[in-house]
Amino acid sequence: MEALSARINSLPVSATLAMAAKARELKNEGIDVIGLSLGEPDFNTPEFIKDAAIQAVNDNYNSYSPVDGYAELKQAIITKFKRDNGLDYAANQIVVSTGAKQSIANVCMVLLNPGDEVLLPAPYWVSYSAIATLAEAKSTTIPTSIDNYFKITPEQLEAAISLKTKLIMFNSPNNPSGTIYTEEEYRALGKVLEKYPDIYIMSDEIYEHINYGTPHFSIAAIPSLYDRTITVNGVAKAFAMTGWRIGYIGAPAWIAKACNKMQGQITSGANCIAQRATITALGAPVSNIQYMVDEFQSRRKLIIELLSEIPGFRINEPEGAFYVFPDVSHYFGKTMNGKTIKDASDFALYLLEEAHVATVTGDAFGNGDCIRISYAASVDNIKEAIARIAKALA
Image 1: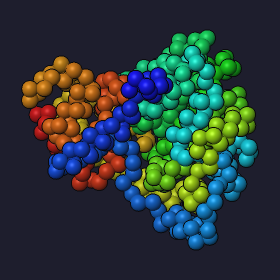
Image 2: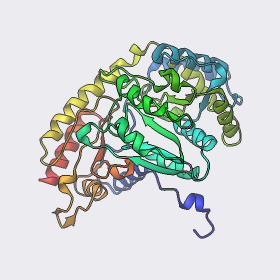
Image 3: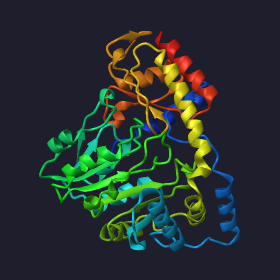
């Protein structure tokens, strides 16, 4: 431990992965744990995408791919950005990476200097603050609550900006809350950011297609912000391709060039077969994956109905993604089965040990009043999990 770098010692363990590991340990002991902790669609990758991967194997795609992605994939991404987001990017503005997490890490590593400040509207995805820490920057959280649907206001944004602010990270639809910023809301936040030309914007849009009616809007579509916005996306969530590990960015060319340079020294090009499959995935009509979105929507209705019956759970209706983020602060300070619940972390641990249901503490997402529950699980598992939670809290 003493010989490890300060860099790794300062890095927290991913809370979502830690909870999944704890759940696996209990499963290995023969305990029937229902995992609602991971953000992973429980669907198989669609057949037409798998067929493209098999074709790529048969076509002998087995050599190193270009660091920033195959030209045909970059073209598919350009077409997708134009079709779905109204964004114009050229090939030198696109970088394909081993998952959107690497895309985000590249951006932080090439933009941030020690002491720079990153603004994180909370709740935020667990790795944002950790990646900022790795880049030796300081994270500042902009808090929200369930009462305002977990959205920051322009006034809050203005108040949070300091002379050291270099980057703000937006995520809509949001993990963990399912919140979607409307075009009007993003334009109002954009009015504030227009006054600060040295602040860059990272817009994580990985959940854009898992959306239950609020039209998706990309902040880069605001002309005055286009030149300093990095749009991050990938195929993991919408196409049920989590293990294929393909993410990508659309960014100002100088940022893309720097990300390409960074990636060239760390992983080089992403998996060749997964890239070929992604060309097919992105080129298909979005309607091809609507069946998954429809299923998530019906599960959302179910889980909200079931959780609403548990006293002390405060719930809002998420507009996208596949999570609910209930406020469980009602239980803080209470003792149940001899265990005192101090905070959301204690509460999540209690549910794992007593109800054998894995969730994730909201502390990991910058909101200590809530827990994240994923409904990317079968209807039977959702029903059984919530029944167990209700019983453990009765």
